[in-house]
Image 1 (cartoon, rainbow, N blue to C red):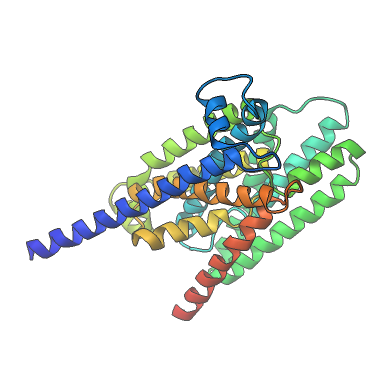
Image 2: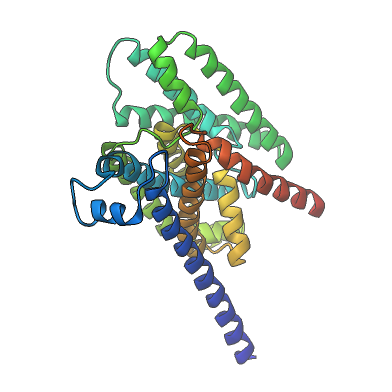
Length: 345
């Protein structure tokens, strides 16, 4: 009996290590390919010379340090944030289809950011990163509030998801209406941002998003034990000392902060928050937060790096939105999860 248990633990540990190793290999490979690929091709040797050798005269030095590396860093940070936000929402609602985009939370953040940008840019003022995050956070909380009100009245997951989609459509419609009052130059910026993209990132943006996402991610990891208890039911979590009300509020705030940071800098990026946590749990065959939380962040980074690579290189020099590519790969996962859930019900 003991040997069987030990062999089971060895198999699980081997699976966890294998999934982690594969993700790390993809992570490293995508960084290398993203560095060299684009409308301007930079060889690996020149890229290494510019990045590690500090050679200012190396071909593509400015492109790498001012365009591609900040964009890669943003894809890693924001991709991980989206996946973590989705994991927290799925834990909160106990539903594998819950996610910031599906529930309309990203659209709520998009609306408040668009309102703030139109108001400030119309007065020829500058928009700071802090203002973007705060406005997106307010929009996320407002949308989450509507979803929670619906969730208290409706228990069926399909109705909850449909309500979230409707909230997203309403927010997007209001955003489009607001954009009509923006100046011509603001409309171009708002349009590019509203499609979901990691382009135009600067190192100042990266520093701000890294501080916010890192703090929220570390806090989320330290919540692994109460999250694990909550996954077994509110009654069990309460029996082991979890303050349910405070814990639920914390989950809402953390998921909203992570979603707000992504929307503020990159616009709404779809289906990452749903697809990645589900895929990670399917690969490792467990929902243990200590394992899933770091792998979700890594998986979200890999997923977004891959989507961004396709978005900017498939039809180069023309560029697709990241959200379009993430929808192409993420939506089938959502359809699969919904069909599988419906089959069990």
